[in-house]
Structure formats: C-alpha cells, structure tokens
Amino acid sequence: QKEVEQDPGPLSVPEGAIVSLNCTYSNSAFQYFMWYRQYSRKGPELLMYTYSSGNKEDGRFTAQVDKSSKYISLFIRDSQPSDSATYLCAMTWYSSASKIIFGSGTRLSIRP
Amino acid sequence: EAGVTQFPSHSVIEKGQTVTLRCDPISGHDNLYWYRRVMGKEIKFLLHFVKESKQDESGMPNNRFLAERTGGTYSTLKVQPAELEDSGVYFCASSQDISSGNTIYFGEGSWLTVV
Image (tube, rainbow over all chains, first blue to last red; front, side):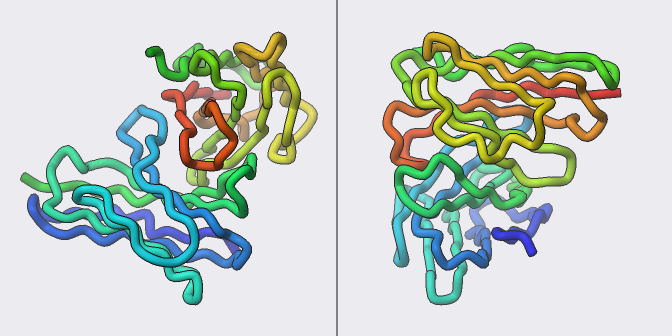
C-alpha cells in the first residue's frame, strides 16, 4: 500500500469552476502537509504548507487537513486556465525532516 | 536571484554507461536535496546534504548511485553503470533552513533516458 494516494486524473473543468483535489494517507505520524504545483517540464513549486488539522487560505487556494480521516484537500476558487498543471500533495513527519513523501499528482486542465 | 540550476536538462545514454548530473543550488542555501521520478511512479527522495555532509541518504536505491557535494556548493549525482530502470527525471532542490516544505525550491529536473 502506498503511503500517499492521489487520483491521477486527468481532471478537466470549465474556467471559473471550483476545483477540489484530494489525497489520502496511511501514516498517522505525518504532521506537515503540502501542495505543490508542477507545470509541464518544470520542477514542483510549493503552493501551500500546513501543519496538523484545519484550513489555511491563500488567495484563491484553500488547503484543508483532516487528520482523523487521514485526508487532505486543496480547493481552487475561480479557476483560471493558468491553473492548468499537475498538483502534487506531499507530507512529512516533522518540520526538520529531510524526506518529503509525494503523491503521484493530479493533472488538472481548466477549459477557457 | 538565480533558481536551482540543473545540468544536463536531457540525457540519453546506453545501458552500462555512466552519467553525471549536476545541481547548482540557490546561493546561500546550505540544504540540498535530490529526488527522482521514474516512469509511472511518485517523486521519491534520494538524499539530503547539509553543506558538504550527507544528512540522510536513505532514499538512494543502490550503490550504483553516488552523490557528492564537495565544498558545500554544487552537487553531482553519478549513476554508474546505468540501468534501464534508472530512466526518469532527477530533481534537485535546495533550502536555506531545514523547515520541511516551507522554503524548498526545486530545479526543472534532469531527464535521463537509458536505452
């Protein structure tokens, strides 16, 4: 069983829609949760970083963590064509950990 | 400010040959990480340098992989001899502090194809 499960998609939605991206994980020791965005042929870029359960908002993006269900989500409001990319969830055990565990990524396409 | 730079961006080599990938981290970043993504799999951690010291190399797949960071600046990752299953994209990342995820910057990757 993978430590982090993420639906690979692809997910295609019209411009302006609310997008919901999700991951589940099996290791209850994970404390730090991240979402990365990766454009084609580029490296991952950190979008959101949260600690423990709860919500964190940054502009059109909201990250949600439910540790009791081992489930994390990323919501994108008012989606734009420029949001088309692969979104990777990631997590680790403590803030100084060397290793980040990534999900496989969800390919998202926003149709104009 | 320049980002994390990786070279070469693409490499095609034959099975059994040697390839050396180079990473130049962001200036002043003591922490340097190598990750890779092989076909159909997730991005996986290989190792972490703090300056010139290996902090964690638990992700290195086998002894065909050798990473160095002499002088604590740029790093190289050598694969010798390369096997078909080594094909994928190798990412380097760097950070100033060690708070995981908070300030880790990834390069664009070195795409390796072993034929």
